[in-house]
Image 1 (tube, helix red, strand yellow):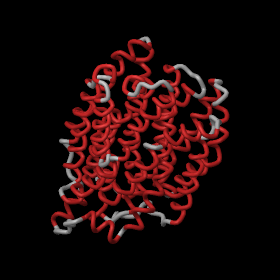
Image 2 (cartoon, one colour):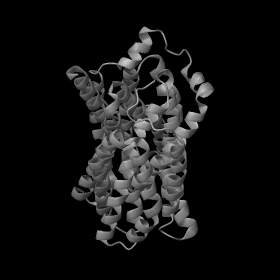
Image 3 (cartoon, one colour):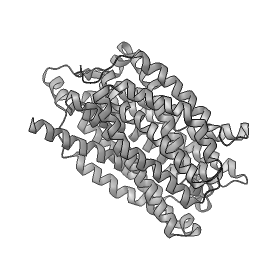
Length: 424
């Protein structure tokens, strides 16, 4: 029992830290969008410049399904550990290249083209990260602790986004806007190279999951896991993507786009908007693993449904309160947004891990999760901006949150409870 507990702890550190460091790299772009827009996509109209910047942000997400196919195949064929190591390396180099990339004023249209290529490579790498890290923990965990341990991956992801937000808030507080536009943003990306290689060395020191090793010993590894998962488990892929819909919108809209929204719709300063973004990350980090723990005690569905209902009911009132610009109501809204988001993000990893059988778990989980994130997370800032532009109301993004919450409620309500059951 002691040995099993130590294996769980070591795997949790590896998965959580790896996801933290990888998402630091990936999320920087979203937080720095207000600075990158005029540098890589100069335009006479600010809306056009931001639209182009977030379009490239969306492309990074749209590459994630390709990454899920690649990493899903090798994760089910060669092992979970090797696949997670390679995903870290594929994040390190592109991130450092962004720090060195000349702007539009230096090399013209080659600058946005270079930025697009780098984001595409990053998107492929991230396509195997969350799913691989989560099922890595799920396959190491005991049944009564699986929800809590799986939540640590999203804990790490949110900690990585928090780290990116905190670094940007610190830079914005210590450098004036001119310095940030000239070279300050490059510092944040350069730090990503260091943290990515730290994650690489952490993951090199963990063991392969016992469940995958058992598959290997008994020669039950699928020769074509992608064909197998689409042929026999297509319905589960669709359900998994629909369940992930609300989580992807939360990440894209509340975590990535919110600082930009607060700056340009509520007219907060760049530094203050980043501080609010940091706050929502802190609250999620505090509660997310507690929600995973509760899902082990009371089931995945009650906790997930509670979070979705909270988002569906209170999104419009919270956006309405934030638009007044009063600091108390902004932080009040952000706190409860984060609380409901924690219930969703703290349970979704376990739900998806338990949805697919072991021989195709990496492929099924990765495809379902990343299709949803490609379609709905990366495009959420674009959809939010479009809703605001065409309706003329700053509260319009709330409707997208409400719609995605209701859809996820309907789908997760239809599946069976999987808490405390052994993986098949």
